[in-house]
Image (cartoon, rainbow, N blue to C red; front, side):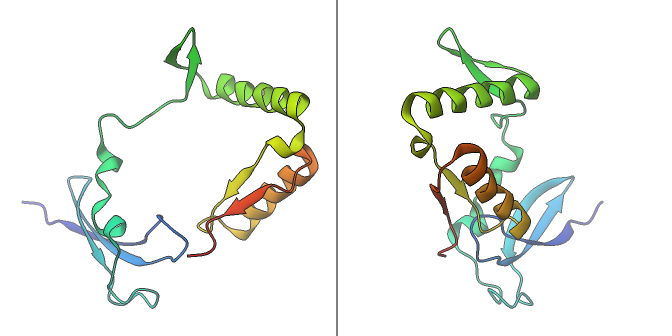
Length: 136
């Protein structure tokens, strides 16, 4: 009988960065608890950090992009999805101006990713409408 693997990780739900220990059995998360050695949370977790992991293995989880065509969501390629996004952003910017577009960054991203996010918004879109979840 295989022993349940204990994997240390960092929670991705907010910017706090709590340490977690995942119990993984047959490549499936079966339990999560706080890591008592983690300096941020010292073993404590919020409800999401402890219990909101079932989405990882959900049968209804998306595995490819969807685009609405003729009123229905249909699977598509990543190339088509990115092109769709580009065209929609261009349409919105042309019709309503750059301030009609906003972007939400995340404290869980690296500084480099957040830098690219704000650079994209300011130089390509032409808007300072950037927010993030950095206030946890």
